Image (tube, rainbow, N blue to C red; front, side, top):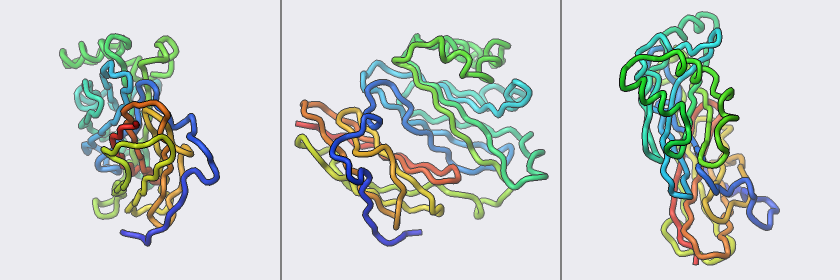
Length: 273
């Protein structure tokens, strides 16, 4: 539903950009699940937005892995139902939530499927090549199964630059489609496509959401936002973007997340003079 307009300064009393909001290397910005709440055995679309400020390219490996006994619960399904490899900075994976999660719903209203997203510059991540080979053959190898069930164990062996790993959960329930959560609707009014002068600019963010605990955060490939995140009050927030002194193109990202798995992402381009 639409709530009354109320402006909230994201940066409060900040007088410059927060370093946490500057994206200088390959980074997973957010993953949007559609729908954001599913039933056991249903398909979910996971759309991942990746920032690639160095423009070296990115391969995006997305997989579901709900850990059970040191393995992925989803491993009993055909491989392409729970593992997807794409080659785009904004990639979508249609994956199937394990029907076995339904067993846990006899005693609880909700459980969570676990989704991982790995973005890598081409050639940097051996697990990407293993996934490519297994997907072509349609068979999960023991090595890939072990890697996907415990990605933290091999991340330390990869370079810091050009690699980004993210995790998100997808709520799984037996609620009807009408009862389930929906993703926020995000509208941003600001300097998209504009030529910005050095200094402060404002982006007005309007969020429609069922949840009352929605937060928004801003990221940028040049300059930065005044604060990493803010709660949305009254359906609107005012994000403060600080343009850099140098003449560069900047990609701006605004992400809204509610407390029940709902996510929305806005991307805008600006040229700083």
